[in-house]
Image (cartoon, rainbow, N blue to C red; front, side, top):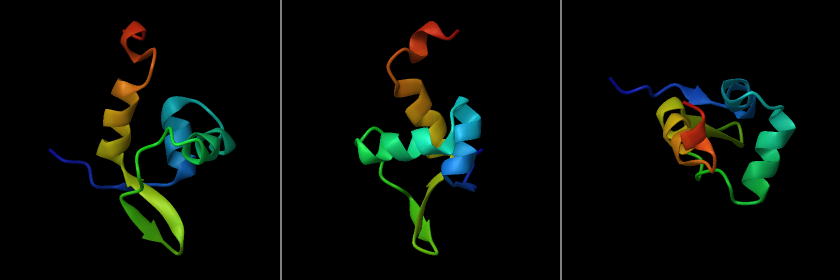
Length: 64
């Protein structure tokens, strides 16, 4: 099943256990995938996009 819920910086931060400002910094430095949508001028990502990104992050394999 596909998860098309849109996540903001806050939801992404909660998912990976960091602060929203950290996620903003990831985007600023090109470490996040491009946003899937924009609501009110703010970027949002599908939950599935972020879950896939998490599996590709450096160090992801050691978190088993």
